[in-house]
Amino acid sequence: MNKLHAVLLLASVLIISSCSRRSVGNVGTTAKKELKIESIDFEYFHGKARMVLRDANKEREVKANIRVRKDSVIWMTFSVIGVQGGKALINKDSITIVSNVDKEYYVFDYNELSKKFNFPINYDVIQASLLGNPIIKRSEEDVVDEMSSMYLLRQKTGTVDVVNFVNAASLKVEKIELKESDSNNTLNINYSNFQPVGDKLFPYNGTISLFYKAASGLLNTTIIFEYNKAEVGDRELRFPFNIPKKYDRR
Image 1 (cartoon, rainbow, N blue to C red):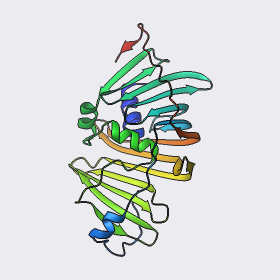
Image 2 (tube, rainbow, N blue to C red):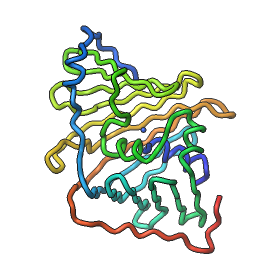
Image 3 (tube, rainbow, N blue to C red):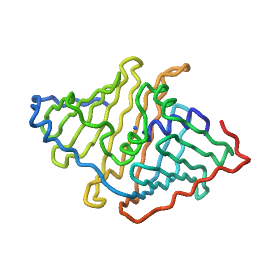
Image 4 (cartoon, helix red, strand yellow):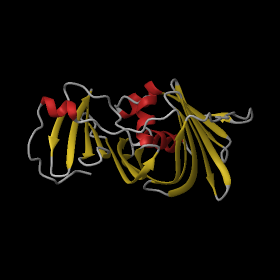
């Protein structure tokens, strides 16, 4: 795993197409306040998923074991054919990725990632995107459009425009589109296969597509995830994490 793959992987999972439906009107201030999106709430989350990372050069499939302590830490291990290939620890201050294959590790801070992608990336954004929750807090400036079976919640943060596609029946976010106006970098997240986890619906399937301008041209990285297990509860989970001394920092 080189540094570019590490950044793209986390910025996408992390942290995350156009819609042809016709808007049939704008919801007023009262309706805007009444649009309460259903979010997964928990103390601890544990999930297992198949993930596919695809770019212009190659495709890599891994199995991921994911644990989350709410608003505190996200822990992941990645394996290929039963062999652990790497792990990641995401907390409020930084992101650390360890590659057991290359015997090296990377440490990123959120300011570095935010500047690279011209989007405010922090722990809260990553946690929300993993769970299918809204990634930006509501504000009075938000605009809500009503369609036949969907609400469009339009938000703006800095130079980034965000559109949330919210199912009118379940009130779950089914798609998020982000576009940075200066660079035209885009991040599209699609959620599907919603099943009950706890007392809320959780997206067992998702696709994250990142279109990002680099010196070599326009990069496109796609991450597909399929959960086969997802649980929430208050039973305390462990988050073991260490970096062997012989590993090099990149």
